[in-house]
Length: 601
Image 1 (cartoon, one colour):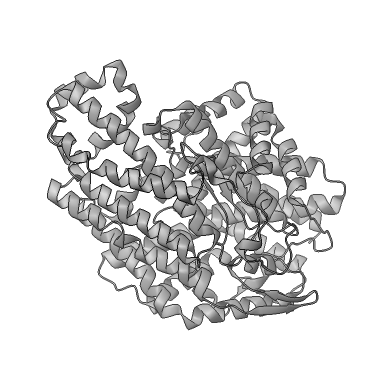
Image 2 (image 1 turned 135 degrees about the vertical axis):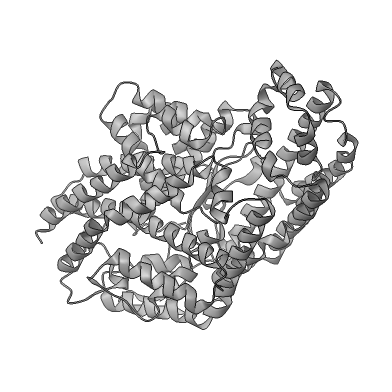
């Protein structure tokens, strides 16, 4: 299916353009049977209670059953989630997801005794048992649980927290339904005809060469957010309150401390990122000055920051053309990597195009049993979508190698590591497309796109990270997160990051209310650390540095067997130091200098 201006209903999307979820569950009917089996397994959970400390055999039996239960849990959850994202307004899919969440929440309650009881097993005994060969597949899992001893509550308290898990998703679920289904953005007149305005098409319209179209889309889009700003602000405040509550009851000093603890990432890494990027904001301001001159504008507005600087170059890629370009770009990683990814993108890994009600944006959803699925809202006339596809392909291949190289209980890598594999692929794609560009204008276009991509991943995500940390700190200091307080904080950051060249609209600070990643707290900083690491690693591979590709594969195969800082050290970069972020900022400055020369501004 070619991506047309008219957005189809889900039922009209051809099977060839959809993902194939059969590796998770053959079909909806099979999912229903598996859900019943899942619920029946819960009846067996109490039999293991009180046995963990009695013997090595008893503990191993409990762990083996927990693994079987968790693998089924993952399959059911991924299938239900992916089906729901196909059409957020489909009541059947939402009902399926709701039933899974109710079952999973019940199961979490049934298992609530497990971790506290495991914590009570004497250290001397459990360490001896863990040394047995049969515990190899559980060693990382056990070590990470035991690390949480100071933050585990009593059995009864853990059960109450587990039973509240479903209710805790309400702010995120309500935000998703409101912004993807209920909000009506209408349409925008363009020289090509009326274009529907949605969460997905907004980005495409911000690339439109006609400034009046961009302004109209921007104004209409944020007018709808303005009409619902109090509701959305309360939803985000609710998310932050949940974070604060959970960090308090688990004896963490702050929401940030709790979120970073799971990855064993020092808070200094977060602070170093923000401080280093802040120290390099002058080069970002210089970029916006370049953009203003290149677009020949008297005033640079917020709706002018995404339009390609080389407007006369039209770059289009059908889905298959994009896959072919990606395959050639990733050739330095070897035939196996390329063949696997290409086969997946042309097969059943990806849900390719937008349809009515479909979740906006893009993501990769890799699991142990299923394929590493990719949700896209691909548009052939947006070159960023080719980079988005290679980005999500990086995630998916990371999942592929992690699942193939590790046992279930520690195959899953962290988001901190995931953003390395994705932006690494973007770096290789840029290198290939620049070297094979058939004109100086196209090369300049790609250079400008690369600058924009690093800006979006390094500088913008750091701005987002600074904002969400300030929002949590405000709440934790006793300041209510009102819509005015949130907007004021976000506007301050807009002014600081965009610099003196930017003229904002009254509604520009509403951008802070529409970022879905804020509902996965302390997530966005990992984009910035990830691109910093990937820039360093991609340079090593592209330069042919001895051992660089082999070390990168070690990282991809590491899965969850190491904490992320250690995993990246294996790959060849030390993220406990601010140096990779400094180097990434320097790379951005170098590219900006090249861009200024190419544009002759």
